[in-house]
Image (cartoon, rainbow, N blue to C red; front, side, top):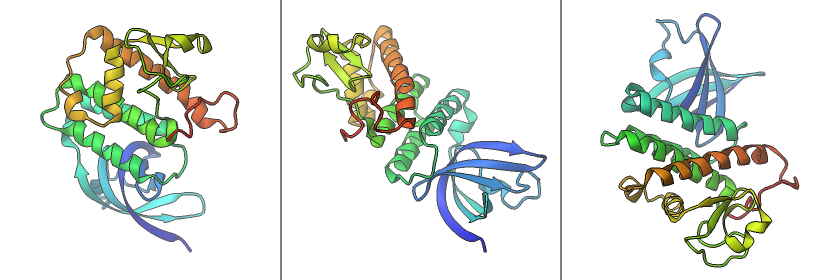
Length: 257
């Protein structure tokens, strides 16, 4: 006998199968990531078709079979129309979805992650959002996302010696889990030199001060530097996230928060 479940979730991916079927990838507060099969949902007469779509929140009902979850009902709760109609916003939403796909591989219940995702999509859907702020929403999501997972970087003091930071000689270390000072640089020669603007952005993001972030006037050089360390940090964390916590290559801050 199949078990029936009901929950609310955000569709962050979909994949067509055969002539009329579709697989939905949904993130929920109750179950985490779900992979749900929509039987014949692409047919024009399908009763489920209007209740579920990419980057929309839906109340869904599904049954758990032996090998897969099958969608039985879907009611649209919220549709982010501005995201769907803007190529720039849609591309940013896809990048958020890619973070979920890279880091969350199984059903891991996490209400904080769900709320963060919905919050960022609301920001991305805001009528007043300027195109230049789309990238900041992505990085806002990324840094707070990994922080919820337990990878929050140290941005207040040196991650190694715990001394106050000199804004002139500061470096970001993936290995050590945050900003380090020049005295500790010999412990990670791969650490990248950053500036006070990068530190400011990171601190504001981790404080979730979006109002201030959206008003920042940052020099292009600092913007590029921030993007570089963020993207490098993502590439560094993914294999660590997927490996055993007992690996000798673990970054130092897994259990910091």
